[in-house]
Length: 299
Ligand code: A3P
Image 1 (cartoon, rainbow, N blue to C red):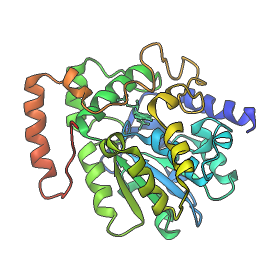
Image 2 (tube, rainbow, N blue to C red):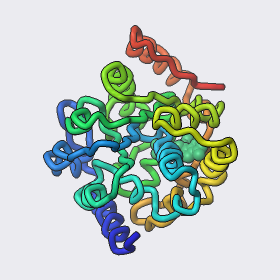
Image 3 (cartoon, rainbow, N blue to C red):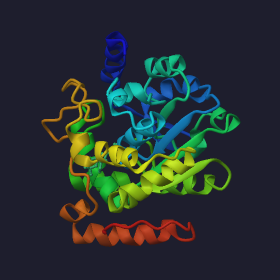
Image 4 (cartoon, protein in one colour):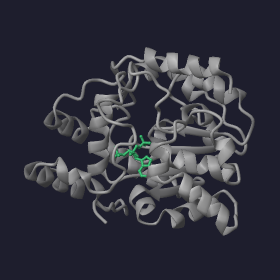
């Protein structure tokens, strides 16, 4: 991979401002709103694979699994470039979109957009989407730390502030409830595989096999084991291709917290006050009623 292209994408990332905007009632970074026409008119291709998620749901983990599946388990080739180059992030900016345009098929693309905002070409080209969803309590905690670490995001304030903003959907990429329910409903009409982070933690092999099947792949057990091993939390934490260690502190300040922070289910218990937990459970019951979706907050 051309180091100049990597440099250009990193530069674009560092230029992002924490200012927030709004599109069709969804809170997004102003930088995304500014180039919205370009993002919305993105041209998908036959054979594209998309990883979609609300932020902090295990996107990077799934990206790496998808890359290895497409590469038939070739770990050597999976080390060719940082994850944000191998899997362009649709909403990140013009350079990322140029990288996507110049990639050979089959491409893997990443988006955090809620389903109603994805480019229409996704559905015209009948792309396969793997949607990763994570229980909102752990997602919220992970997102809080991410805001502190990612220098291009708004200061999250203290935990109480962030809790309120998350609950009211006033965080970048909008309301968690709308996001997971929107994509859940969409799976009845499009090629969407809906995967839960908690299931991946519980039995990663089982979930990798689901993804393989979805992509029409079947590997012998030794290849599955290689993918499993290479995408374990421990391996990914030490892998510069996926741990974002190539980004300067002015983008990700990992002295605040690592990108590969904990990788567990239930860390919310170390952060939620009893009063917040009560408020949360009440809201969750109301907003998720009738959705057919249920999240596990502990294993
Ligand atoms: P924590 O902050 O709770 O540790 P995303 O890629 O969507 O931004 O999600 C990041 C979250 O996924 C982080 O959660 C990160 O540690 C976790 N994660 C990344 N790779 C993982 C892996 N291989 N196994 C378990 N969790 C992983």
